Image 1 (cartoon, rainbow, N blue to C red):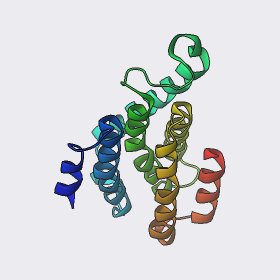
Image 2 (tube, rainbow, N blue to C red; image 1 turned 90 degrees about the vertical axis):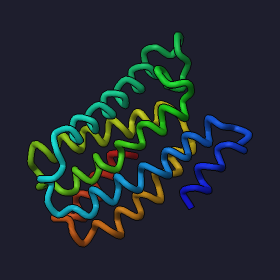
Image 3 (cartoon, rainbow, N blue to C red; image 1 turned 120 degrees about the horizontal axis):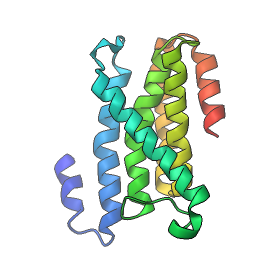
Image 4 (tube, helix red, strand yellow; image 1 turned 90 degrees about the horizontal axis):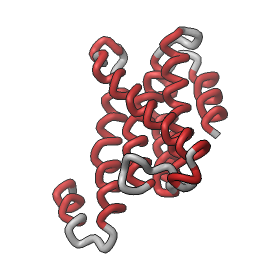
Length: 168
């Protein structure tokens, strides 16, 4: 399957979009299962948290670019990437690990609030890119999160409702 997906980029008529889809298809499930299968966050090193935070910074930059620099860059946030879909593909890499961190931490802890803030920054950045594909990717993955992680999460109902309402 992975070989077929990799080879499909070569005969694509729109290689930029195919590359973004390929990256999402390869990396997002791996990050999803890595966070979802962990009961203990001890293995999640500071490096991973820093990388997710860096993606959150790119989400904040996308919002700033879309709101304050619309005359220079246009309404779709894309800088420093080649187009808005590439930026959205990059932001999706941190979206689900940030939501997984949010679900794994106690409800009123500082880590939970930080993870929710990162998650919301990335959602706002995705919205600023105006990428339909990334937003359509978001919906089935949230449904998968609900099915897989709901039984393993403390205060699951409260966390899911808060996370989904704030992301809308």
